[in-house]
Length: 469
Image (cartoon, rainbow, N blue to C red; front, side, top):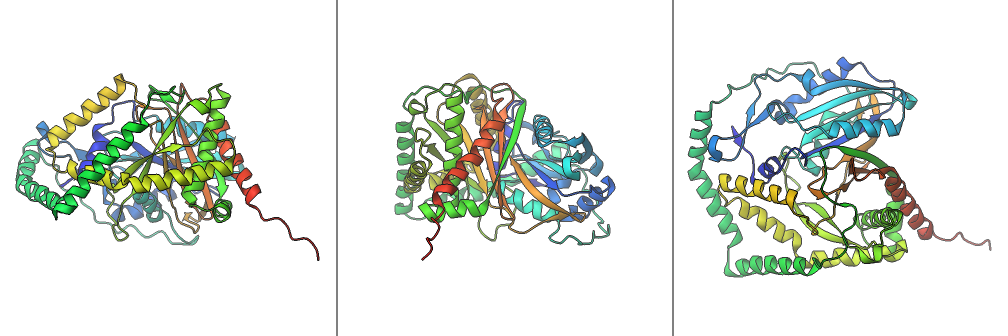
């Protein structure tokens, strides 16, 4: 048995039937599609490298400990890998609709928390592999690394023969879970002391942590001046829409080199432009509306290969009031510099560490109460979420078929009606945009605007042609 971390447990506790806490992806491959059995064999051959795929979550009775990972004695690969098809020739819009429906359904907590669909019938002979994994299993970085495990780096990579001798451990009883958790009390106490020591190694470190946290809270409070709420903020239902945009990484880098900043700055700039256009199309004035986005930040060490979440977060204000994209990029650069100076990421890491000091039962109660409060009260601190994860810059293959596009999915939390996930792969950058089904019907125009915004920045960044001598 292995206990979930406090952060991983949080993603389980805040799920409430409306806010689904699974991340996902849609990998599109060149055709012709392989046989369903071949895809099963490919995933089956990789299971020894992904222990979590054959484990499920058990909750400790009475909340006496954090949930634990245990082997699923009834694991059935065919349950987790499904076979589907679009009416040929399936369009990208039809694939988007299928993706939205699949991501609207919660994962079964009595089984390992992942599912995949092999989808045939796409136009051009293509096929897709739609995947969703609960956020308690992976973060963005480990999710991308999972992709490189499941797929192959060569077209002709042989599928290894099935020599796995995995035998599930006996499922523990409730009494065994309680005894195991009680046995962890001493270890937990030692771990709490370790966390406290790490936070308070010297008085100067303690003062720094408290000062940074206090400054971040004050800064956040000063940002929350009541302003008109945009229509992208409000209650959501359990159903989702999804669409995507695609650009070249080379174009983003050309803009970065021309005007300064980072790839992430350019990405946030074009997203801000898309939000501006969305609000204008709804007759809302971006000059009098503030859009703040939650930006998860990986704090994973370079040599950390564990699948659990290793993320902190900061909240950035998108300059949607700026019409000119070059000026908007400068505003985004200034905002990101301000956030780095405000130590939001460090404070977020500190708060996550402090969660390790909270008894599991109290942590679960607090998270459930917070989720319930979010359903009842409007919140203005966070209006959207933007995740950006670098992916592999080389082609990947499944059963000899090259993956041509890798599209990400980000979940929505209560009060947030639209979110954007970004991932790079093999010279391209894909934006996967999730929307609440009832309140965000205009996802496709939003995605097209992302592409138009980058095209405009690329046009003005392009050096003037040399005049003939």
